[in-house]
Image (tube, rainbow, N blue to C red; front, side, top):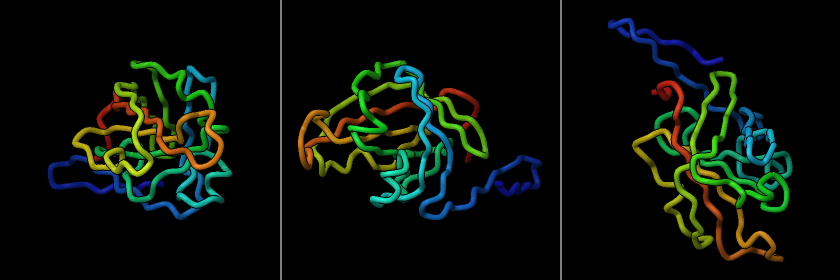
Length: 155
């Protein structure tokens, strides 16, 4: 559970413990795809086999900045291209439920690092290989970015 810290102004700040590689940190629900997917901390092949992985250098969902999740195009993110602008993505964790609204969809080169850069708002970035029917190492990535639309983000 998160620790609570109180300032002299009686504002509450939540300090989240950094999860360990392989920990299940929450669930990603994608209503349009009728999917509820476990979010696994880490980017290794073991983590990718178990669900959607959370890029460890990005913030946890619900935190102001860019939280990056990725998954295989043929399994957890199959049909991700059916997502539309304004669709909701819901992340549920032990420290809260966070509702995001898709606002940007794009295709980038596989080595494009702009998808993992910091952001001033609380956003969620989903990434998978593209084209979806490509055999082998795909040359591009399909990116869905969504902004937090429910209560104030965590610090």
